[in-house]
Image 1 (cartoon, rainbow, N blue to C red):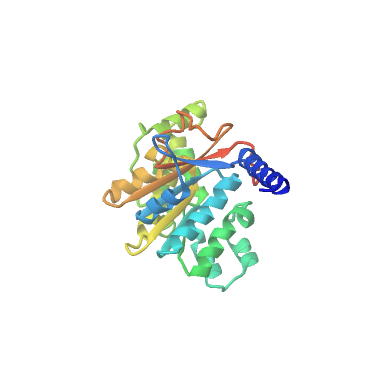
Image 2 (cartoon, helix red, strand yellow; image 1 turned 45 degrees about the vertical axis):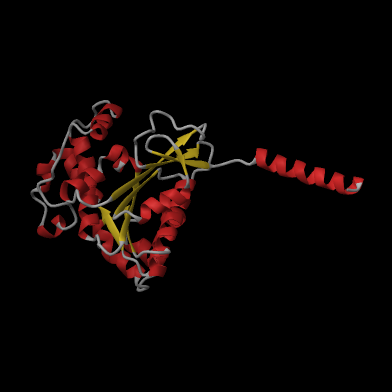
Length: 286
């Protein structure tokens, strides 16, 4: 081997070495027990699930990207029904009009209560569902009813109209105040709002579970997007789903941020079947 060829080979090897050491990962996926796993294994588990709860951090760019990628991956082999906390049940009609091309995105924005980050973070999900002719379900309770519960408890819902009751979970709302998610909520808020604060959260969880099951098709996978706190620790929405349909195969995903993504914190373990750890320095969407 000539001296020139040896030099070129050495430079190439040094470059490969440099690239391998300088590569930076934005996220790492773990199992509930804290074992590193892969995107491929997450999708394999998702393919076997009836209902998937994908818990996000609402302003996390990596979470939003992975939400779309998981949806695309499942759609390669299965029919999918999509649902999301970000759309309230009384906005299903304008959402359907958008999905059927009867109105454009401006029309949707003027007739539905879209989140401020809809265009960047949720429109890609809706548009993909639209391109595949997948149903997209507005699962969340209209916020005014959560506000009613916060101000006066579940009994405040007794006086709403028959039509309004079609936008919430059937009454009476089952409620377990001992669930750690609701207990922690009270602690975080220093007791502000009293028992009605977690009850308002429970109304959201119950309503999302209700509309997931009402639109679940045994011949397809239902993937639901929600804030991670609505499904963390296998509670929230999942508790209400299992209360009605314990026999279904559920999968939960959550998103957390850490300074070190290569070791899952003890606090994050057992939060979900799969935990996506995102580098805390990743740019936020708002």
